[in-house]
Amino acid sequence: MSLFSAQDHNPDGVKMVRVSGEGDIATLEHIWGTSQDADEAAFRPRTGWWSLNAWATNSWLLLKNGTAIGVAAIHNIPDEDDVEARLALLPEFRQNTLALLLVDHVRLTVQTGSNIRLRIPTSSSAIWAKTALQKRNFILLRTGHMMSRAVPTSPLPLRKVEGITVRTLRKGEEATLLETLNRAWETTWNYHPIPMDALLSDLEGNRQGFFVAVDQTDDTRMMGTIHVLFNRDADNTDDQTSAWISNLTVDPTQRGKGTGRMLMTIALNYLHQQGATTVTLGVDGGAVAPVSLYRSMGFEPIRTFERWELDITTAQP
Image (cartoon, rainbow, N blue to C red):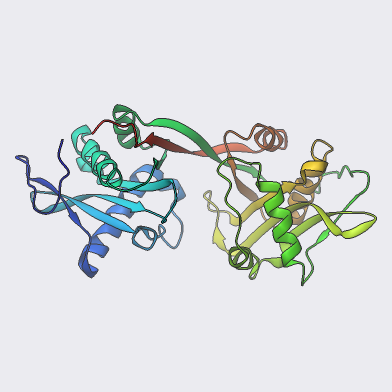
């Protein structure tokens, strides 16, 4: 098996060329958006799909007889063991051989570096990509779900937790909040510390919907968090006004006492007050306790993501 490049040309008129220049970038984004539309049409953001070019450190176009039909992109962070890739293929060209070419290209490219694992996320509905990944011995590492429910038409009863009070985030508490979030997330799968600039970006214009559970005897001691984002100018996937819940965390010392349920109830009641009709959230499919909590509170999966992985130090060339 050989690595296709701009110079290598197979009998079927297929080759990979590195993206360079504004014209190639525009083509890349067009193929990425069209491929995403075919797999995830119901979830296309109002502003369009996020930029693959802005994400990628390297990217290529798959050409067939001179026409661009597919995309392979890699995001590589120096000194990291993992490297991530994204694939796109126009619907009318979704033959298994072409999907395999994209997979083989990124695999053989990253094998020339120092990375250990290649990860490729897909939608559960992208059968063309999943089939190729399975054929090249990728394993399904993890799933993730987007879940949704209707916002209650009247406030839910609040079951309080002894010793805990919930309030909104105060100005000047960003450092404490960041420490609280990272402490809660550090035991979760695929954890990476949240940087302060990312937290500040999340809070910009959305501070009033950030609630913290604190110790009743010391309300500077955060024991849990939840962030409710409500945007009257955007839509959920069901064309209702956008409402999203994120950063539901509970301090490890506080888990199993009902703090998460209390925070979620407060979040849903807040959305009721704001006039939201539906709300969505994202969750790691392998996180049993959060998935169980969300289901018990009326959330159901509406979309599933899959993360595929290959150990490239042992993969056959």
